[in-house]
Length: 415
Image (cartoon, rainbow, N blue to C red; front, top):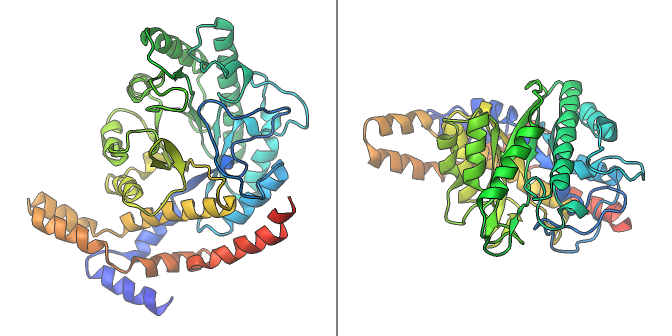
């Protein structure tokens, strides 16, 4: 142990905080790394087209992954620089289709076996996502809520197939897969009928969730959104819609940090929603004005989310994933920055003097509560984080960037 950590340990102990217990708890919380940061949400479908559904990756930093092998190599590099054991979050358009044209209503576990084996070899968990965008049958902006029955049936089947893939992966890995359903459906301008698309969406969801799957292998989540490019005036799957659907059907609700108004607090929603649903999926991102997909920072918004998870003892019911895609900087560095920051925010929350804070609040001493919360911000957290990195055999501080730059010179620059 470093001298800095020993001193930090003593300082925290003076406020009743056990740094060793905090570090042990942190190692048990996985973050799900999103595969789409590595290739700008391109995927590996034969003849894949331009991004649609309001999704946009900006920037042209060299070296993006072009094949599954390249993407796996980049993920390996990122994971080697992030402390702890984590998960992979995979979208359906990232299957190994071997150059074959396989439409999304025909995908099966065989096309994802390579990814499942890759995760198993590394001891990683896996999460999954149907891909309801960048497809000819989503071109008009509607999928599961489309007025065209044939289009709805196509996308219902896609959802069914994705749940089957997730369940197969969960069974093989011995680790529950969270399958998250997000659709881009909506109108750019004001609609006349807001009701009918939501009725169709509910019926479609009911159809694709009709088969009961073992929750040990698969858990379903539904994801809301305030607005998107091409759906500025009306999103079928709004927060209220999916919150109601998740409560009624006891599904996980996915809250994306970039899918709400900038003045809304995602942290405030966590304890309220968990009163009524079995669990939450969090997509940790950073919204900047209209764009919801910036690299996660160690900022107040992210800290508040992680504090709420820890303060409410919600780690067992909350699944944490990342969701950003920045093509303006080194893509591997983006993974590392975002994941390390999410973990730092979790550690900061674990290091709060919780017993003293609760005692002050229960005693009605709001002055002491505020003092403790503010003084906690300047405690020697960095020394504890550095100790965590040492124990997990990853670089301390910004030294990891040297490895990313070396990988860029040797690998990325040749793509």
